[in-house]
Image 1 (cartoon, helix red, strand yellow):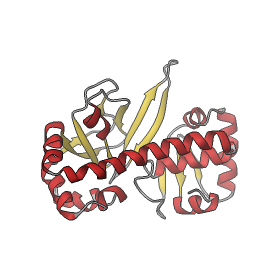
Image 2 (tube, one colour):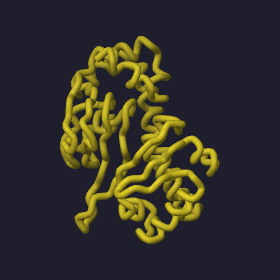
Image 3 (spheres, helix red, strand yellow):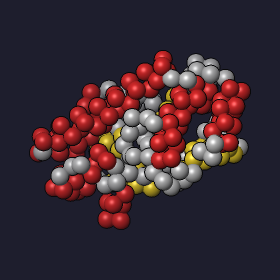
Image 4 (spheres, one colour):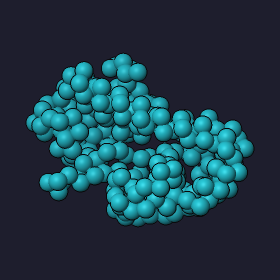
Length: 229
């Protein structure tokens, strides 16, 4: 567990916790090792814990009525998720699969409830985490109405690389494993249009296209170029 503490503390949300609350959460964590392609939880399942990604990458997806998978988020090291079901006691809203061999820290539901009972000062911090998700969702809804398709595409790529606001855009390269068809669904466009827009961004030196993958060499450069706030 010790070697993963710096990774788990890299989130802007977790790093803002007082050190004694960080340690209290670390004390309740258990590690879960998962293989590439293994499912962490399914849509409709009861929520059994609050998670932090220690190593690897997970895909949050949903399946449309046509049977096609739509990517909702990519969760990399230092990303926290799963708190909603801890509070509302309702089932999981999406499927979650490991994109690579992964290690996840989990605070089981009973331990999570005990933490809140012992440290009620955690509530405002979880409120802030939930607000981050709500704010990201509203920003994306707003962008769909007011931005060009190119800007919508860039915003979606940045949301995927920053785990919906839990991390700031980084200078290091990030490779996203997703199809152009998935991106097209996300911005309600066609694969042909997305391919054209990706080509424009590639010509600007902001990304590189591969089969089934997109590499963003410097996410912070993409962020600053398009001036998102």
